[in-house]
Amino acid sequence: MDSNQKRKNESSKKPKVQVEDLHKSFNGKQVLKGVSFEVYSGETLAIIGPSGCGKSTILKLLCGLLQPDKGKVEMATDNIGLVFQGSALLNSLTVRQNLSLALRGHKLKRNEETKKIEEKLNLVGLKEQIDSYPSQLSGGQQKRTSFARAIVYDPEIILYDEPTTGLDPVMSTIIEDYMIELESKLHAASIVVTHQLSTWTRTADRAVLLHDGKIVWQGVPQEAMNSSDPFIKQFAHASREGPMEIG
Image 1 (cartoon, helix red, strand yellow):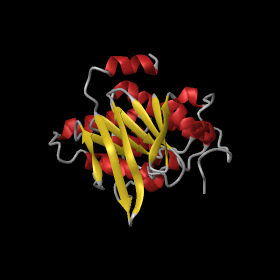
Image 2 (cartoon, rainbow, N blue to C red):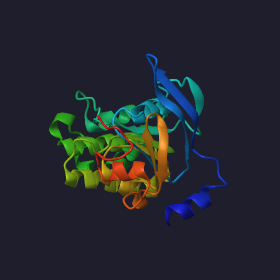
Image 3 (tube, rainbow, N blue to C red):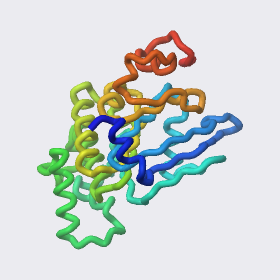
Image 4 (tube, rainbow, N blue to C red):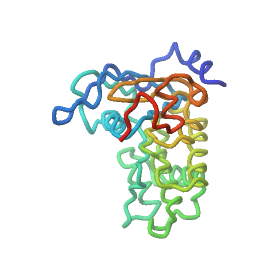
């Protein structure tokens, strides 16, 4: 199903994530200047743009780590999974124990918890490493463990913070494949903050480009490379020529 058809099918439903007229300043500097977007179940939105444009600030506002100066953030559920830029695993705990932490508060029976943990580790190909410590895993395995932890309770919303940063091209492709598979299996509403071209063009149904605290372009990622819009043209082709001052 293409993105336009998906949007038509979702148009009569309430979005899982609704952001309206978001403003945020730090020390008198305005970082966000009226950002609005929505994300529906089964849809992945990429938030892209140059460094310092406000992408990470939006993610922190969505997580509740920051409060907006103006505007509102509405999350339809508190069942949210977060994939950190780093793996953010506790080195003193095994893979099983790291995932078990994410299930605290859900009051599952021991066999139910084990079933969920094994199911998600199997999904990312790490069931055999269930009793390993993070130090015994490769960087790619640690990243996949963080994926399993984020989705261990079948979240309705998944937030990805630069999920392929620092990974080689092959491992980036593997992680992107997992993101695509998760959208299909969980039907969650997903938001990915990323700089990497392959990540937002392969995994997202829609993308919004931020510059100077505002959305300056939004559309289907596959159309970005051939777009005549000067903002996305500059960003997608990594060009120094264009309306965005980079640096």
